[in-house]
Length: 303
Image (cartoon, rainbow, N blue to C red; front, side, top):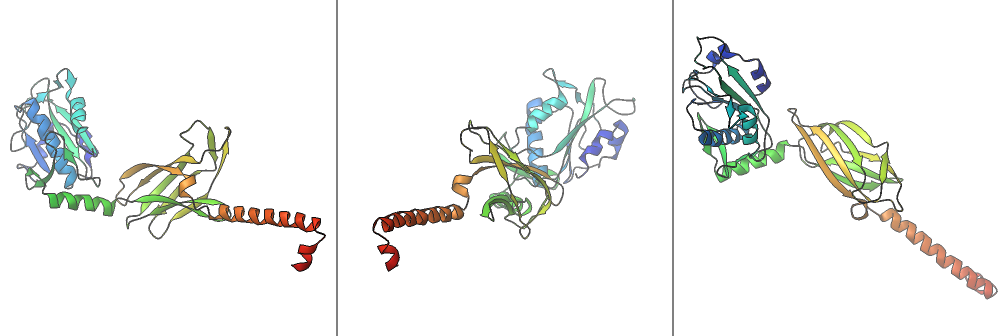
């Protein structure tokens, strides 16, 4: 399952290396399967394989993994590979997969002219649970079968996702100016974190300077803080912007996340309040000085 891209190198002769029986990682469908049934079986298999470690789904072979004629290259005037792409897009959420079609090369292999054996490789997924759209159920592999998952197993898969996928969030702090921090809230570190800021979603046109970082690792114990500055071409500098994060986990899965940031409600404005307090005290001093001057220094002499 970790090497699904190697399917692209398969030729018809390689089909002889398929296991003779279905197992946790292999599922076979005969060439005579109906299109509607094939659609449902692909969705269920995708849900099951993604939820339980990946595997290989083969269409156009018998129960022993031997080619039995193959399936049509096109379905409803659409190439079968494109059709399968659309079927897999219905599984929520989608995972990584690879589709490879093997055609006839000689008469020793039972693949008819104009037909193919289709191999769909499903990579292990950490983004589960994955749900089939045909019946709104979650599936897992139980031996050689894809079976509906119980509520307990679905929650366990969801909990595994929370524990293994890096959970990154941001916060502000004030150190001689505003600093934006990226923190990991769980025990799964994020690697090669690419951080970029994009300007506001309002009409004000603003841009960021010196804001593009690639951080080797951000973990629960190693947050990352950085200063930033903006310049605006509008009448007022917008306090809203987007934080774009691209990163990977321990096993190399890639993630993209967009976080909407609003400085006005998320930043610690204690420094600004302190400046306002100083300005207010200075105003009082000026008023008292003016009164003292008019009274001939009475206030000053008494203080």
